[in-house]
Amino acid sequence: MEEQLSLIDLVLHASFTVQLVMLILLLASMLSWYMIVQRAIYFRNSQDDMIRFEEQFWSGIDLSQLYREGNERAADGQTIVGMESIFRAGFKEFSRLAQQQGMDSEAVIEGSRRVMRVAMLREEERLERHLPFLASVGSTSPYIGLFGTVWGIMHSFRGLANATQATLATVAPGISEALIATAMGLFAAIPAVMAYNRFAAKVDMFTNRYDTFVDEFSSILYRQAYALRSREKKAG
Amino acid sequence: MSASVYARPVQPRIVLRPTLATIALHGLVIYLLTANWHAFEDKTITAKVVPKVIDAKLVELSEVMPKKPEPKPPAPKPAPKPEPKPQPKPEPKPAAPKPEPKPQPKPVEKKPEPKPQPKPEEKKPDPGPSREELLRQQREDMARTMAQEEAARAAATADEMAASFAALIQRTVVGYWSRPPSARNGMEVLLQLQLIPTGEIVSVTVLKSSGDTAFDRSAINAVEKAGRFPELQKLPQRKFEETFRRFRLLFRPEDLRY
Image (cartoon, rainbow over all chains, first blue to last red; front, side):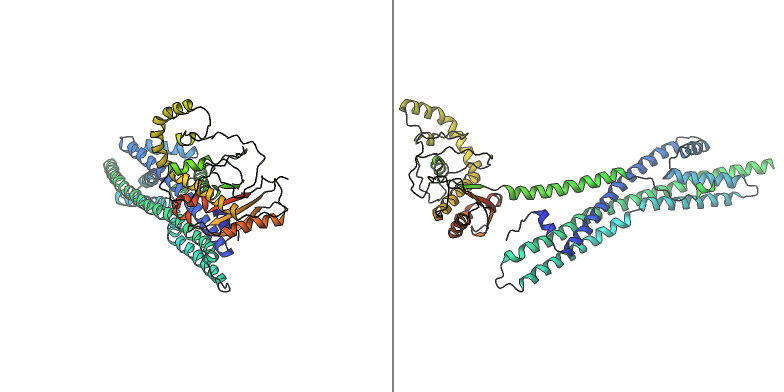
């Protein structure tokens, strides 16, 4: 009876099902941590970008100037995400529609608003990426771990059936190794749940800010569109 | 142009840092878990059954902790054998009085205690020579030791207890050990014992055989006869886990003539 009660041995000597469960949980934990870190970096970057862009936007810079700067960066190969991409979508659509003759200002505004909505949905999609995975890791991995534990305990008790002398020592290692599965499940689940809640709140925050920006920007466009049309009317 | 407006949602590629962070985190967790787990297991005492060791520490033990009810008659043996210990041991190695009264053709001079804390109690009986020197030394040490001892008593109790229990186990086992005629000097068998907190031995396995089955058998028999060490219940739980949950016992006769 040389059960080495070290963690590695417990894992290595576990039954196949329990090992499979542990492997799944390890993968889930690694993937969810990957996504947690990735999301954290992405959110931090987006927040920095958003703050920078808002400063620029409200600094009184000419909007077409801002758009051209964005063009240059896009030409450099940077992907423009976040608030700026909403701005670019709206501005591009606005200038395109405004150039067309016979477009009334309502239609121009409606068109650019719609485009900005689409761009915003895209942004939301980017933000929310990986979050469903975190949610499902957070909610299912305790159950997976529990399954492994129940399976392992079942096995160790089945081993008792033929033993004439049932001591704790015959079942204890089995139970110990089975419980590792639950521990791993919790280890995977807790960070995932916490990160999911945090990131969901962040996504809400970003969505609200983008929403506000869309409204603010369309009011600016509204003003410009009317100014443009009235000038055209005077000229024509 | 319009391709940019209705752009495919491009995900900025953030791959490297998350991957590194994930691997680092999981590696760290696994390392910490296994390392901790191992620290619990590996800190095993190697209670060598060397029949002749210095016995001065037993005196000191009973003086340091008089409250410990241990049925230990401290019988100092005047046959110390300087034993080279290659591995540094966390616990001070306690001594065991040899149960078999075997005459030793060994030098009878005392080996000075290699203990860092000087204890006047043990110094007293140790050096036989001049009384003046002894008194002076005693006075010198007195003040220092008074303070030191208080601290040491509090700090080292668990260690000392563990050490004295190791000695107890050693003595008990050696007491039950009847060596076969095939035993030779230099033979050694390393046993691994597992104990439970009540002091019962739950398993004995041979880690390193001596090559002589009878000799191995005699060592296992000795442990099995000893059966349990109820004194271990007095040990604090944590200390028990550290030292006595699993430990090794080395049987090595060195007092044989051949």
